[in-house]
Length: 327
Length: 191
Image (tube, rainbow over all chains, first blue to last red; front, side, top):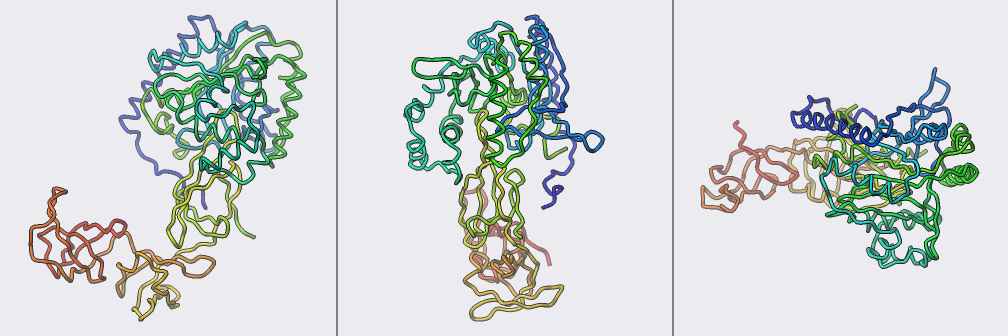
């Protein structure tokens, strides 16, 4: 299959598209005014880095300097921003394009616009509130609901994930005719939860309100701190959904360097198990954590998704100057 | 060595082989909840029986490409149990039994061009061109027909045997253009 055959023929931008691009430009101004009012500083950390963010399920696009030295295009400006935080820069935000290999669908573009920000001494709940205010800028004053991951799972599937075995989850998948891939059983509990979430729950979240899904299982913490909630250890992490579309992912940030190094190792082991290349963990980022990241919470918002909802577009390509098949 | 394709590169129209069966991909949906393992839901149509199935793959998994090729061939004549076609370039002839023709049966006519699909080197199906021009061999003269769709139609039979609906002003013996995907009348063809 030749690559060229996937490309759409070049056409002139429609008048509707130009109207949407004008609206987009106006929204950028709103973003900057929002953070200016709150004294959050705009930064623009580099897109390229010689070492990588290591995440089992995020694949990076590599660029080659002078045709031979690999540099990774960032999947989020997180590491650069955290290095700045460790230097004592204070509250910061970055509005930049980020890159993810292989993530292409009606709702995903491998290159997309992210708004990411960090707030010192903010609890997870404070940042959730600010994230909702941010979204109101583009979507209007929508009501919201904050529900834990555990409660959400219980409501939509009747399963209490804490006390449900892998076998029982697999049984649920088969009983509900959820199409699954063969190796899912070997991939463990999180993969099973993930398939159920993606098939039975996510598409239904936030039909009429912004749905804040919070307190994830501790095994899905990524760069979030952990917290004990009764018998359950949870990650201080949340996502925001509207009309089944995931819009944001926020954490009360992990500041422990050795725990972070340990999670990198685990992510690389997971990558190996998935048949992916392991990646060199960003040592400068780890050094910054050793130096000391201040207590903070941070969130990344998919800006193009907000535009899809604002401009009532089903395809992400419609809100971009050109989508993946038009470049 | 079987050629493979990554889930991320699978597009509508790709020919893949899953569990030993050949399929044409209809659609490919990428799903990635939060920060978890992404997966692809691929809808595909069986190359021979036309059944559509949906399968889930872990993103990044590789699928086997099916050894499928197409060539344009001219139908020479019908035999009692099948049709004989000829490759326009090599003049090679081959015979395809009626059983493997499915819906295409109604669009078969001598001296017309068809796409023949080969799987692992053997012909497995015959596709008519999207638009075909044929003479109406049977229709009633200008009778009142079905007015439900706002257009006045009547039944007609084409020289290939296909039964279609045509506007009442179209007469027997006229040549018409038909969309073979839907079996719908498109226009009259002036000769």
